[in-house]
Length: 249
Image (tube, rainbow, N blue to C red; front, side, top):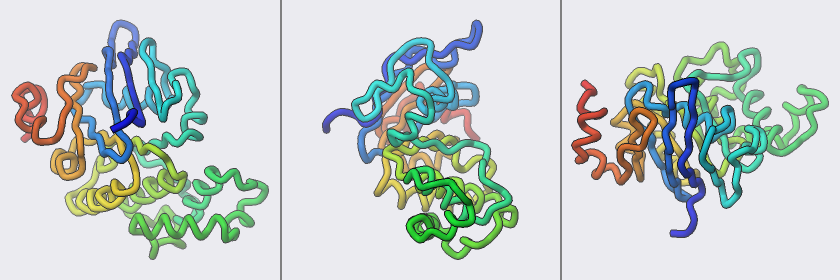
């Protein structure tokens, strides 16, 4: 199966006397959708922040595509192909849907930022941005100002901006947070399509979505990996059911 795209070894992060991640080890293989689940406060978002470079680990090593990125800043990790979406939607509200995605394409390509208006009209930026919007289900909303989007559409737009950078690994931190059932089903369907083209590390509380999408699931409890395996193994693991799944209504 070759070397993992992402290899995490003994990652530790402390905040004062609290150990948020406690010697976490994790492998994500190329082409895999790997879900990270666990109760609130388990350390999932802290771990994602360590992988993305927003925070620095106190101990441990992170290798991405064979490169030691443990001390690399976030922008260098992004350049290597590590892209993250957040629990809280972050888009440019005053711009159109298309303009938001053009910015992401522009950042990826290194295209000049001389004048925004000229960039928004550049076909070499517009074409891939429109392709991305169609892929994510927002092709007919390209000219809509983002302030007029629904919450579910805003989450779709953020996802479009992430994949427009052509990442090698998508770090998705609760992409369905705050969504109703229909929006959640729409995002699950989009992610099912995206997993054919992208390697994904998915943090998500929606267990229906997790088990529909994941090739492998790791369970984080109190900052430690309690169990890791294919979805059927995680479903059957009594420790997991006691610590997490069994506590969900």
